[in-house]
Picture: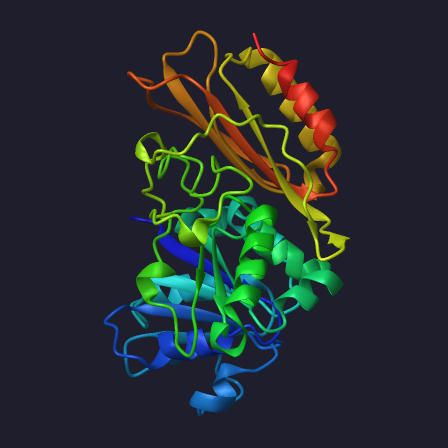
Length: 356
């Protein structure tokens, strides 16, 4: 039986999660979605659109969706949903989990790798993060949780763009891009996100996309807003006409006088890795810095292999897989790391030392 895809919806207080969830639970979109809502959130959906008995925590909506309020552990809620689905009491094809506005999405994501019952029935599709255009800069300055939400994202939406100037949106966009270059960023105003932009993103699928996501190979000073290119997941860098040959020693970026603790850096090399050296190095790095490594992903050129090796991970949990053959394209390693106060120079030097 196919695994049920799960989307984690995160974003700081007031970023628009409730608006999006109301849309999912009430609009006629034809999808059967179970929404797991954490009742400690800043605004409970059920207060607005559901009339329900306090003892009831799974409610069927008129559009075929389900609202499930967590009154305990996420694993219990997922297992209860699964049991009811198995017994044909309810029907759903996918799950959206709303985290509280001040939550770190990391432990929620880890649930899908660490709990066997959950892993047998569900697959994590993506982390979608909403950032409030009006208050986002201040929240990122003051709250590490807001930075973590950005660092974990597979897709970022800047909400309430109608409340600020285009220059303010651009400044926030650039900051988010430097914190997390692997997540596409889109602005939205006065409306909800189309569901196909939230669901089935395959952000955790190793073989879904071999390229390292849209902004990965762009120049640091390249302005995405005006380049006229499509920076969706299907953007083919080989034909876009930009020079992507810049060195991987990126500089830290200072935003309005402060430096974000969560930052990203890129490693690229045309030389192949020694597989054993790389395995040992990454194992040691994860042991020491695993908690600080939010997300990392890469396409690796490994000596002795005619195929690409794709890897990605969350904290200490890393997976890798053989992908397609290199074919006629240049063999090149491309890796991105997103983390908290990571020793960039040490890591880059260590990766250099693993080259054959």
